[in-house]
Length: 195
Image (cartoon, rainbow, N blue to C red; front, side):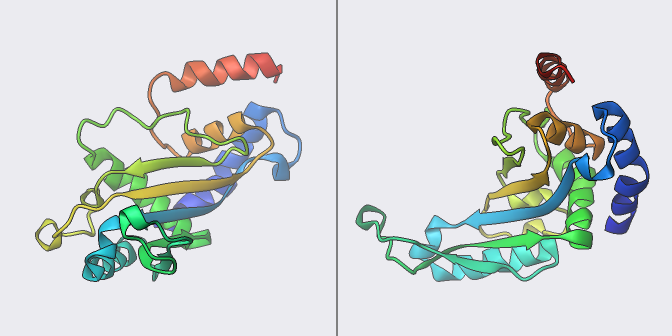
């Protein structure tokens, strides 16, 4: 499944973006390097079993065993102790990354209630894109009956690119749905840069 998207990138998306962005070298074309999925579970401080459930569900969604994240410092008002496990994360690369991306676009995002597209303003200065998912139930791998607690997650696409606008073009080529204002913003930015 993910291999198809990888082949699509190499055969169709790269030539299309080279023409569109006026690049002469394939290495100038923006490339998705990794996808990081992070679940921060504040309730794990009081109830450690919630963290086990979150790790199990994240492993089911991504097909990879999560890494436990720990608190960097103590915060007494949150009853948080330095070194305490408070979340989990997975970093996907290569085939697993493309497989997750395809399932995210094809199955998960269309299941979000009242979904109108992702925010096109959530890029950082380097062109990486981050967004939040409110509940893990949007992934078909998760059974509604087994979910005891609704957990959210942060998804970050790490992208190698020359300009922030190139990242927008790459994710659009991957059929990631952005809000309708997306097209106008990109064309406006491109005009200013003179590309």
